[in-house]
Image (cartoon, rainbow, N blue to C red; front, side, top):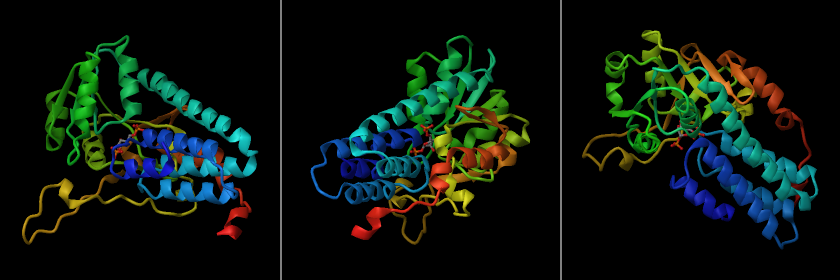
Length: 304
Ligand code: RI2
């Protein structure tokens, strides 16, 4: 699929989920580079990257992927690019499996896990743990787009016991079902360890904190934000009011898709490099995104 179609599908959320955005963007740039017949590849390639990056705003896995591939396109010969993109995709797939293996060790037989939204990384972890342990899952509907239904269906298909609750039942359910752990994915981790994830996550984490229930974030280092290291704020995507409900006369509506969970409400972040405290986010960004921090001369800006 070409980058323009991919960007449209990301915008409409036909393609969604932080890691899926990265895979879709990487594959579309690979296809574009292979099919390219023009005479200013770097300039045209960067335009495709910009298009992809503008399609959704909060999940940093998307701009991180695009920026990394644009970096590769400047640093390496074009004929090697498709192979390098494949290597990047394989690395992310391995990261997902590795996180699942590490995070599954934190789940004990008999545990009841609460999750929110539909995180591939959290679900891989639950599926990995369920191979050898008996676990129950409580998942939220995740209004307004109800991604929790996808989570519930996925778990039911895998024969993992799952109970779907409405978002406002979280506190009651934590007590009633004696939830042992909260396990979520992430869209972006800021340099200070704050986690941007689906709207409602911060409430769940605050309640878990109050009830002494550990909150585990399962996420690839691709979701750490080098931009926040340089002081940039994470932009929270605001979606159409029609997702809440049809217009109500004289009523304003607000529909933010994500919120921030403070690092103090998160016990651990499980990355492919191991378990870290949220306060180590800064170190991860410094180590992993050195290529992003390096000042570079961008030849293509001249030809714009
Ligand atoms: P993966 C989703 O966003 C949720 O916020 C979810 O926690 C995150 O992406 C997980 O991403 P949306 O695209 O763990 O439904 O699947 O708005 O990478």
